[in-house]
Image (cartoon, rainbow, N blue to C red):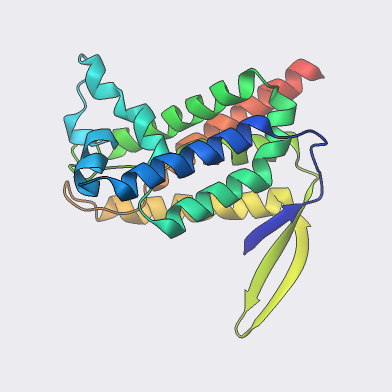
Length: 217
């Protein structure tokens, strides 16, 4: 299943969503055009084994790694999910809080990933934790919205509308199972998708959305 739109337009230009998409694209351009992309990634990605909680400089990659991506498919899929679900969340959280929330979601995702693979020497990168926070908040704030979804049935492709809660729960369950499978075979030098960053960001975003619902009730 792949989302292509939702039934609840925000009704307001998503300024921060557009800024974040452009910023991610710009950093990806710098990454691609760097004289040494590998050195660029090593410098700005999060390498868990190099983190020292007593050394502030070693914590900076928790932020910079959010704006790196591992390839065209990685950045396109991340930015697409941010575009589809981010406008509603930005509208609900407000102009000032949304960018803070985005960064905190990414930090929450990075922290959970670090807990599970703290001895890994493989760079962790991507906006997935932050965007997962946006998805979690969307689930809490707009559970009744419908999501237009591409569904692949063998050789046939169709578009159906499904509840956002079903779409996002499906996404979260995939991350939980994939993360559990990855951690069971993980070694300090193996790579892969940072599934626990997805889960950490998603849960953080969901809690923020629930708190906002209670505050506005």
